[in-house]
Image 1: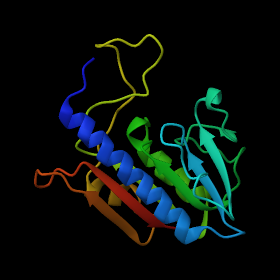
Image 2 (image 1 turned 135 degrees about the vertical axis):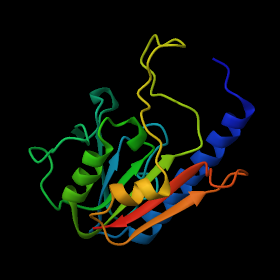
Image 3 (image 1 turned 120 degrees about the vertical axis):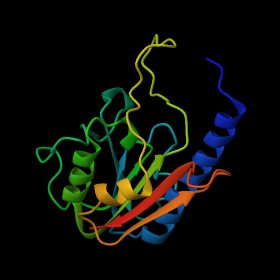
Image 4 (image 1 turned 90 degrees about the horizontal axis):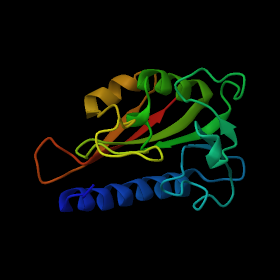
Length: 185
């Protein structure tokens, strides 16, 4: 499949924005006692490269990615992760691939400590994308289910206070490429 120039440029801008958001969050929150959970960091490298003092654990639905926790973030995973376990949860470019994003937001809330920070990024004005299963060909289903507006993100994270949603603007009014959300439990 040929990817358009627009999508190539959008992907580059989105990747830079994700990297910036992770780096900024880690720079501000990294300390000896900070425990981070990075959900499905494989595509972009995740928080580990920015955390020097704290500890980063990973979670992924795919055991082949060798995460610390194999789980579906849409489920209650209290058998694997206790309530209020993490200071920071990083969930970048994941929610659009979940079947129940409202449950994912609830699970992130459950595993964050009071005062904990969630960094969530999601595409908006971007093409349908993978992860694509082995042997995928055009016309086969892709696990890309959702696009979230700023208002939808605020609703998903309504248990959190405050919630800050920042768009990565495109040249089209009201059509940002991407959103970065910081939500405090």
